[in-house]
Length: 401
Ligand code: CUA
Image (cartoon, helix red, strand yellow):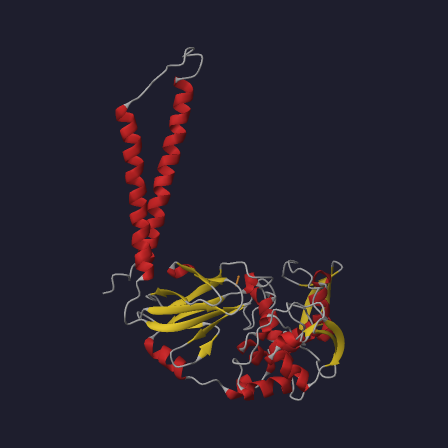
C-alpha cells in the first residue's frame, strides 16, 4: 500500500548487498595475493617484467569498480528514500530527548516515557533534544537519528508486528547514557485508543517515586541516598546544604522556597560538587504536581519505601534471579520469603533460619555466608547498597506476602 512499507527490508538489502560485495572482494583479493606470491616470486622471476599500458586491464579495473560502487549507491539511496518518505496518513508523535530519558507527546497532548503505537498505522516521530545531542535508536525499525537541541528532525516507521521493541540512545551523552533506554509498544488500535484516553490514576501519582519518574527526576536524583548525577532527595526536610550562588559558596536550609526555586530555576543555586546540568521545569510541571512534589519531598506526605524497593530490585537486577510470583529462577523467590523458615548452609553446616529482617539484610550484604539449601552460591555481595536502600528492598520483599 505504501511504497515505504518495506523500509526495513530495503535497509537490510543495502546492508547485505554491500557486505556481500565486501566479502567477495576480500576473498578474491586474498586469493590473488597468495597466488601472485607463489607465481611471481623472485626465485621464479629473477628479472622483473616492465609492462607499460594494457587497455583491456585498465578499462576493466575502471568499469567494474564503477558499476559496483553505483550498485552500492542505489541500494543505499533506495533505503534512504524509504526511510525519509513519510506516508501522508502517518500519526505524528513528538520525541524529546533529555539527560537521560525520552519523552513522547501524543496528538492529544498526553505525554509518556515510553512509546505506544497502534499496529499497521505509519508513525512519524518529530525528534528534538532539550540539552545535548542524543540519538534516537530503534534497531527493530532500522531507525537511528540524532536528537539535536534547537532542531526538529524526523523519522518514521510502520509497526507491522505486535510486541515490545527497544529504544536506545546511540550518542554518548553523559554518565547515564547507557541507561537512556525505553520501549516501543505496538498494540492493537483499540488498546491504543484506550491508552490515549486513559487519564493518569490520581492515587497512583500520589506517591513520590511515580511522580519523580513521571518528570524524569529519577534519572538523576535517587530516593535512597545514592548519588547519580544530582543530589539525592531523601530526608530533605531541614537538611543543610552548601550551594553555589552567583559564584559564591553559601549554606542554605532545604525548605519549600528552596525546592520551588530548584525545580523552576535550578541554575540559581547549584549544590556544591554537582554540575549545572538540570533543565528548568517551568513549562513542564503543572502547579498541582509542583505543590504535591514539594510536599512529598519535605515529608509532609508519607514516602512509599516499598515502591522505592521495587524499583531498586529491578534496577539492581535482583529480579532476574529472584522471581516475585513464587516461581523458582536461579534463587529463592521473593514471594512469601519474609519470615519463612529456610535450611541454609552456613560454614559447611545445615542450619534452620527464619528469613527475618536481619537475615535479609545479611543476605544482601554478604550472600555467601548463608546459602539456601539447593541453590548455587552465585549471588555477588551488594555491599555498596546503603542501609536506606536495603531497608527499602526489605520493605518490598515484605510486601510480597
Ligand atoms: Cu542520550 Cu546517550
